[in-house]
Length: 389
Ligand SMILES: COc1cccc(CC(=N)NC(=O)c2cccnc2OC2CCNCC2)c1
Image (tube, rainbow, N blue to C red):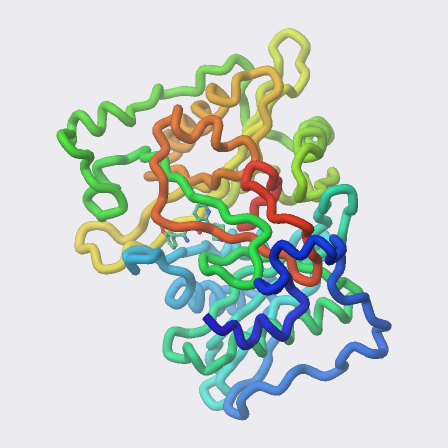
């Protein structure tokens, strides 16, 4: 498959796979800011760039509606991600964010928002190097404007604006294979509401299984079973940061969270992100942590349901409680909150609970990428400590 655009970019190229003579690290050097293109790239003449102020309710609604109607669908086009406005505000405004990295494309005549791409700053450790990067996400071109080659110029424009902030690396994911994945993850789903999942075609009734047998198979207790299991609170930020930093230090590529980051990314926000911890009843130490984010999907073309309520595993650490029991408690509270399904990637140590807790394999893969940073060899998913939204 010719990757006309990606062959021009500083990313690992397929032809270089296995060439261990190439050093690990940046592919191109940083350049002086004076050498960064000062003016935006040219769009086709009927379109114009716009910067999206996510603090503005109208602007946030425009981005929300563009994604709701035109963003990623599953392989069978039965579901489409439906990130909420509150989720987008959270995802796009972490500490140190740049509004200039929230980039829209409008049709000049109608002024309608027809495309979007975003970046947020993140510190990501690659082996022993902590690198300031942009996490690129929510690239979306209106369905009616596909294959007009808008995506390459949007990627070049967000790259230019990231360079203007003296940042030279990026991280992103895609459901498609591009040059060149640093790892490829499988996704897994744990049914919480099997009847709805079967009714909407997300799952199928197992062979020799009745509906009542299936409902019984996925039944969960009404309350978490670990003593000291409770919602995370602001006072827990230092302890959770210590727990997370220690856990993530073992992975080849991982987010380098500090307390400021933990306060933004992991404190509970209703209908956006949920996080729980285990405070030892004896010592009051914080010994374990689990979290998941809320990402509903629109159900396309089903007469009885419109929305699939999905929880996505985020960051989880078990040091005293068994990982199985901790994640089972996460399933229990997500069921209690009305989620239909709990999704997870086989990253970090997730593989150890997936089969045991009755997750089924999804029918797709999620590929992770670094921009302008070469790894000598690809990672196994279990060596990755990075979850993108
Ligand atoms: C169920 O509704 C869907 C609507 C659109 C796409 C997919 C399949 C899919 N592509 N799933 C994932 O990418 C995925 C599966 C498990 C965990 N995280 C995931 O993606 C996250 C992380 C990357 N950005 C999207 C959300 C499912």
